[in-house]
Every structure is written in structure tokens, then in C-alpha cells.
Length: 188
Image 1 (cartoon, rainbow, N blue to C red):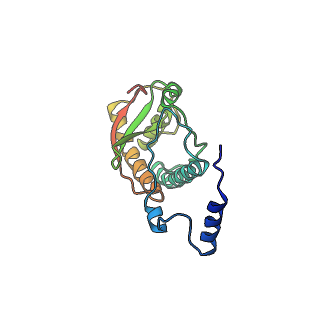
Image 2 (image 1 turned 90 degrees about the vertical axis):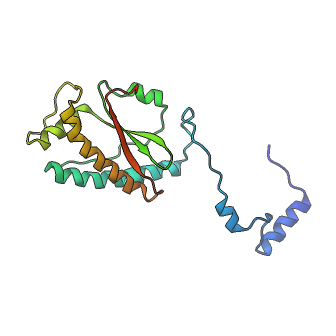
Image 3 (image 1 turned 180 degrees about the vertical axis):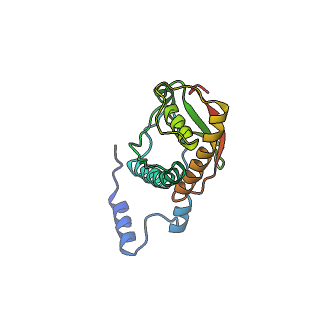
């Protein structure tokens, strides 16, 4: 229930507005510096505002443009990378949605000591490896685990993707992404 102000409180607020001051005695510079930092609870994912979701969309569209240009030059073929959606889900739901086997690359966000994931479909990875070794972009029908050689080849692509992602995030904040490891199952 909203708090009802007394006539005296209303008068003091109006007096503060007319003199250019405010009802608060905290200077504006101090207000800007004292933002509340709230930790994100992954059990309650619907805590991002629409503006934050739009920012994430813009950051990843920038990443798509930069990384797409790199892949075009590296694979010598036309391709298009787009952001289809930005959404919040529980990690347990995400794990259930990925295939088995998967190509998951874990990377560390150094400033927060958090881990994040880049997921690539095995068919896409095998097509990229085939193209880089002089073959066609024909995807294998059945997904399979990557060999050590294929993991080594695609690791360079993932490192470049992390570099481009880090550059895209510079508009939001200075973050450092560091590749941690490869996983083939979401239950890592």
C-alpha cells in the first residue's frame, strides 16, 4: 500500500523543487556512485529488464557481424550469422535442450571468476573442419564426438570467437574471456 504524505511533507517537497534542490540531502554525485549491486540468482532467471535484454541483443548482434566476417574470410564461403532470440531459461532446462553429443566450450569471465558456455552443434563443427581441410560444407547426417584433431582445429575458431565476443562486450563493460575447456556433454 502506498505511503500517504502529510501536507507538511508535500510542502517541503514542492519547496525543494522550486529552489532546484531536492528532498534528499545526498549530493547528486554521491547518488551516481552508490548504485546497488545485486547478485543474479540463476534459480529465478526472469530478473532481467527489457532494456537489459535489448542490450544483450545488441551486443550479440555486434558479435555476429564481426565473427561472421572472420568466418567468411577463413572458410572462403558465404554465410550469415544472426541472433534469433535472447531469452532466460533455467540451466537445468538448457541442459535438457542440448543434444548428445554436443560441442560445449567453457570459458572463464576473469573479472567475476564465473564460467560461461558457447555451444556449437556437432554438425556445424564437422562442416567447418571439413571446409578448413579443403572439403565441402556438407554436414554429416549423424552427430558424433569430435576427435582430438578436430578439437584442435576448432579450438582456434573458438578462441577467435571469444576475442570477438569480448570486443562486442566492451560497449557494456571491460570483460576478459579465457577459454577453459571443451566438453561433449551438458552434465559437466
